[in-house]
Length: 167
Image 1 (cartoon, one colour):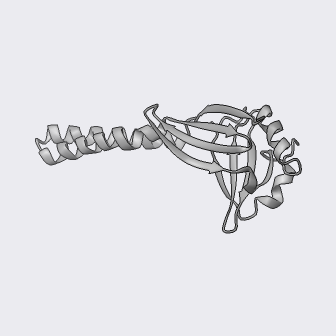
Image 2: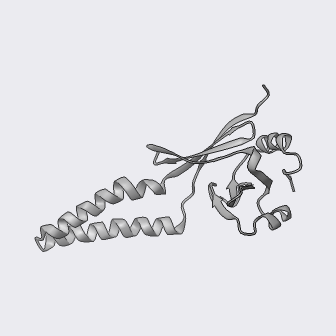
Image 3: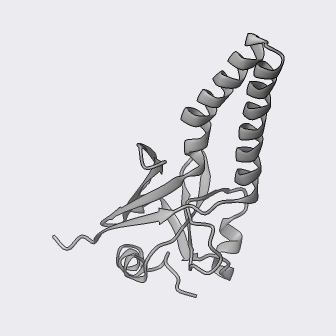
């Protein structure tokens, strides 16, 4: 068999929203703990500790994200790795449902993006080349933005020559 196989690991960049939310969680936790100690109020202290634990175990790991693309013979599976501790399968895309693939911003994508839900699994680095893949089914259409290598794009063209564009 001559199926292409490649794994790509992409570290998600930090957004200003992530930084602000992280600072708010840490700030509110610190204020509640300080208020509990200063006013000798165990309710503030417990609320601060609960928020701190909740933030540390449930919310803050979502800010340290990596995406792993597994490309096998035209099909792409995407996993989300949170804080290098937990892995979760996010999506799986089949070459059979591919409508179009082109570099992000290409004019070929314009008619296909109408009504499509856009999902971004990239590092958010504007310097890196991204590809937009539009997958459709009977019920919905999804535009997936990925950081793929040129080898994967060439291999995808082998499976769907009329659906993959390089310009």
